Image (tube, rainbow, N blue to C red; front, side, top):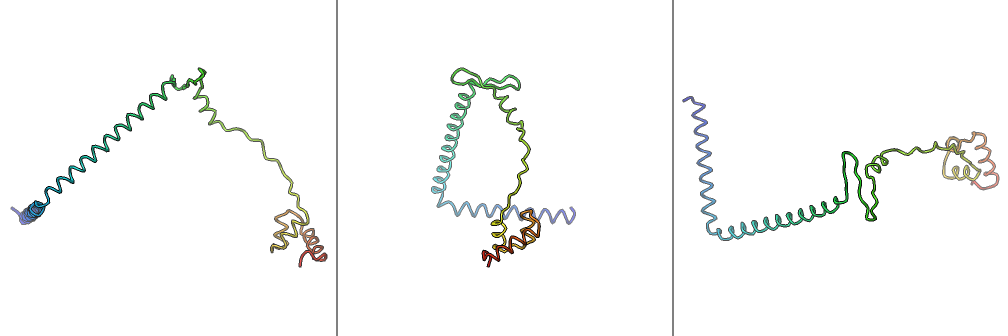
Length: 158
């Protein structure tokens, strides 16, 4: 036997012996509590069975509802229809296809921005420069300057 194999065998024997010793130690230390452990395991089994029973009831009710809903549905190939309560039929496939077709919207109208003097004065009072008012309103620079100058003469702007 080569030295590496001998070392591996010794390490394996040590780990197995240590595991067995820990297992025996745990078993001996839990002997006084074996009745409590039994009750806890029994409670876990009862809880698991209760949850399983609740899931079975839920699945059954879901399946019954699914069957009840699908009694009025007729599917032939890719065509699906449902019978309404008044005896008429609704073509669900057509509704599905119609929902995917985008409606064409009319082109947007070119709305002309109407700017009066009060808008320019309000923008100037909020701290906008003449250049920013000009770009925001679309007015020419000299017109914005004239509106602001007239408002200063009238005392509207301080």
